[in-house]
Length: 292
Image 1 (cartoon, rainbow, N blue to C red):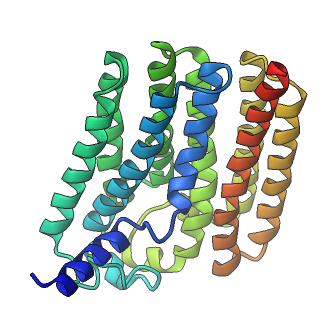
Image 2 (cartoon, one colour; image 1 turned 60 degrees about the vertical axis):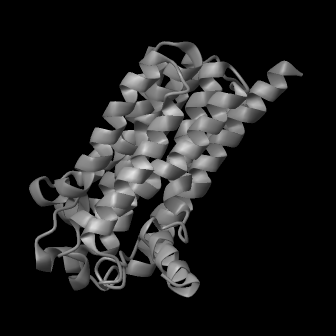
């Protein structure tokens, strides 16, 4: 293989892992950081932090690869996805499976540097990552499974930092499932017409005309869950200021999806990065203020 051909191959893998679109990494990273900071009562152990940040990148990349493998016969019929590497025939399904295996093994190698409980929990993360892409064929709630897959790093973070998984971890996990269901419904609203034609299931289709209302209820439950998490973690005013900012972003997202047009729904989905960041900044500032 010539250097030019190798560069092109690696570039296609880069696109397949969606490293050119880091929003998925960020949406997985923020709740992981929430959990690490709350578990540590401030700045977490540096090794644990580095392992989880690298693991987020690897597992989100693996999730994209296996998702596109599962959707290889669907993506060519959806306007937004027809140019993805597998759908366009630039990466073979066999290559995708090999890449998925390499990414998972790299992530598992990182987890092996942590304690036994975290290693055991990592098998749940792999199962959810592999299961999610296939749920859209058999259930109308694939967004809930995505939330579980994205949130599984939360109990793992508590296990790695403290050696146990307390109630706070499961509360944050539930919050993340609700949050992911809300933002991925916004994402699914972009493809709703195409999905209806080809028989793909989603919460955007399930909720129908009640989509904005259900998303609003989910956002409210997320904020209430984060208030409860703050109480369990004994977080104070600065944390709640972060939640206030997050609530503002949630309201803005409702404004963006008011017409249910694809552009507005996708912008609302992307805006959830700032929701997650606002919560994290509130957590960090609260612990820093306490230390000062």
